[in-house]
Length: 514
Image (cartoon, rainbow, N blue to C red; front, side, top):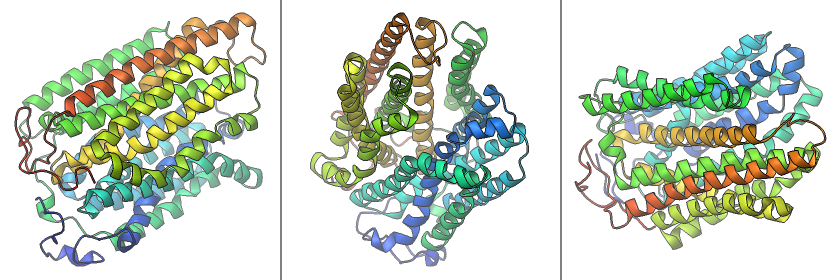
C-alpha cells in the first residue's frame, strides 16, 4: 500500500497503539520510538566491540584456546549473518514490530544466561543464541524507522540519529569495557544487554503501532530458499576466520568457499523457480536496490580491509602500544561520531542518489590513499581513516534508505536484512583477502615483538597489494552502481515483479532529492 506524502494512513484498530493518528511530522514527535530503535542499534554496535576487550580475560578464566576465542565472537557473527534474510522475510509476513519484540526478549534471556557460563563452549552457545536475537532485531530497526515516516528527509534524519547512537557505543565500548573489567567480572559486559533490550522493547511497544495487515504479505515462507540462503552465508562468513587461522595453504578454507559458491548458485536457481521466493530477484534488480547493495558492499570491503591493516601497522610494524594505537584511530572515531551532524545538510544539497555514490567514492579513495601512501607516515594513515569514516558515515545511511525506497512496503524488512547481509559478507571478504595476501607474503611470526627489515618490507608489500586489490574491486562496484542508476526511474513497486528489469514503477517516490 502506497501512501502519498503528507496524507494520513487509513485508520485501523492497531493504529490506536501509535502515539499519533498520522505519521510523525518531526523526530521529536517520534522520540519514544526512536529511543527504542536507537537502543537496538546500540546493542549491535556495542556487543562485539565491548566483548573483544575481554578476550584475554576469557582465555584465562575459561581456559579457552585461541580457536575457541575466535569462535566466541565468530559464532555470533556467523549466526547473525546467516539468519538475517530468513527473519527479515518472516517479519514482512508476520509483523516487524512483533518479530522485533520477540527478538528483544530472546536477547535479554541470552544475556542473562551469561551469568551461568562456566566454559568456553557454553559461552559460544550463548553467543550463537545472541546472534539469533540480533538477526531478529537488527534489520527491523531500519525497516521500522523507514516505516515510521513518509518523508525521505525525515527518514534520513531518523537513520542518522539511530546510527549515531550506535557509533557512539562502538567508539566508547572498548574504553568502557576496560574500566568495567578493572572493577567487575567479565560477565557484566554482556549483562549490560539486558537493560538495553528492556529500553528498546519499551520504546518500540509504546512508540510504534502494530503492523497493519495491508502492509504485510501472506505468501508462504520459502523454507528451501531460507535453508539455501543460510547454507550460502554461513560458510561465506566462516571462511575468513578459517583463512586467518589455517592459512591459504590449507584445503579447508577453500572447501568452505566452494560450499558458499555452490550454495549461492543453488539459491539463485531456487529463487527463480519458486512461486513464493524468499527473495524476489526481480526486486533486487531494481536500480535503487542493486546500486544500494553495491555501495554497501564496497564500503564493507574497504572498511574491513583498512581496519585490519591499520591495526597491524600501528602496533606491530611501528611498535605503538595499544593505548597509543587507540589514540591513532581517533580521527576515524571523531568523524564517525561527529559526522552525523553533516549528513542532513550534505544530502539536502547533493540529493540521495548523488550522496550515495559520492560517499562510496570517498571510502574507496581512502583505501587507495592507504594502499599507496600509508607506509610513508601517520599523516597518510590519518587521511585514509578520515576519508573512509566520512564516506562510510554517509553511505551507511543513504544507501540503506535508497534500498528501501526501491522496494514495496511489504518487503522492507527483508530489504534491510539484505543490506546488512551484503555488508557482513563484503567485510568478511575484505578480511579474507588481506589475511590471505599477508599470510602468503609474510614469513615468520607476525606477532613477534621486533620485525626484521625483510619482514617489514613484506608487510608493506602485502598491505599495498591487498589494499589495491580491494580498491579495484570496490571501485568497480561503485562504478557499476553509478551506471546502473543513471537515468533510471526511482519508484517503489507495489507488488513483487512490478519493477522487474525493463518494467517501470507506478509512481515516483516523494522527496527523491530531499
